[in-house]
Image 1 (cartoon, rainbow, N blue to C red):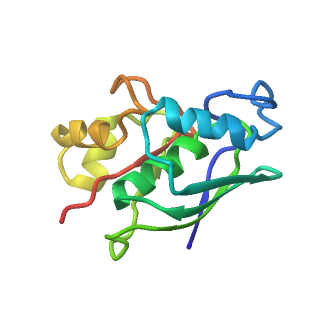
Image 2: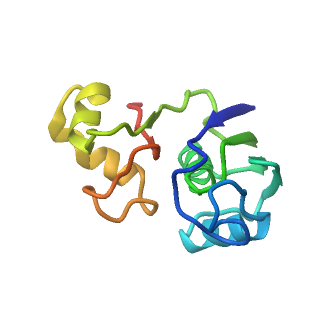
Length: 148
């Protein structure tokens, strides 16, 4: 089980309450967002308590698990994601980065992967949530691919 913090006022506005970053979206709106991104949620339950999203169930891979966490966490009104999701490769720890003002994928790649030129790996690790490597914003949480 893990708990992930997000910037409540940053992110995409969706669903009821999503227009106001003070209100968390409904579980149905979050499920629609996960579906829209083409992520598998068939064995996942999504609940919302205040500004906390609770995910429970099973994911096909650790990558899919991490992408679902980011898909629901990077939504306006969500401050925290609590997950109890099992996946076949849970032995590897997730690495996430919260974007700060002035960050770009190259600087993030330099920090975590040792070479700025490896920024496409971070971009690919965050697809379909990212559609352009130049469109990241402060407060957004990104998945950093881990070797092995």
